Image 1 (cartoon, one colour):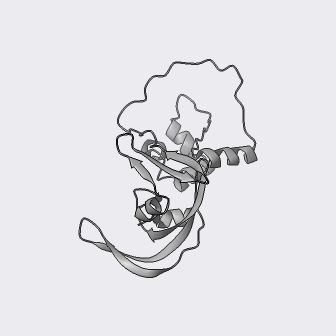
Image 2 (tube, helix red, strand yellow):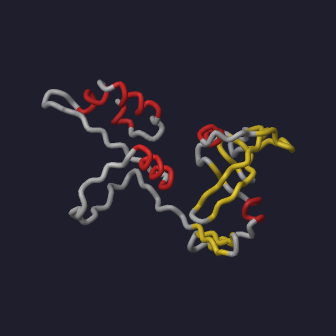
Image 3 (cartoon, rainbow, N blue to C red):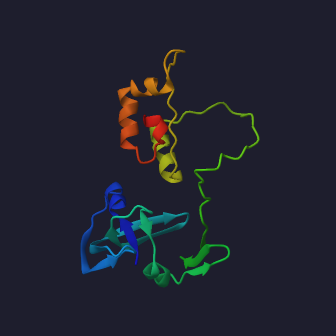
Length: 179
């Protein structure tokens, strides 16, 4: 089955519709969830763009899982050792490769320090929105005045705008920042 999360549907402002053949999905712990809605989800991965019917379910693992229907419809070949998926789209071969894992326990690997040849460039709000949409990655840098007697936490918590932003994105913000 192809699945989209209820959170993904809300964030993408998609319109779910009643499922033509409602059913239940069983979990390993023997609970089951009703599948009563589906949604047409637009996909964009590099040059590949498509719309895929997905069943709507509450899930934490991902916003979208493409399963057997998508694999079958596109005649996708999975290369197990390389963990890649290959299929044809508009007479072009498309290869999907896995993202690099993000480890929470390992410290970041030291990278060589490069001296920037260009000064720091700040983006206009429009360019910022385009860049964050196309890359899917967004970092926020917040500068604050700190004194020897105040901590970073106090400085952050005293700014209502920052508190509001951290609250809105608390599911992706480290706990030590929001305390």
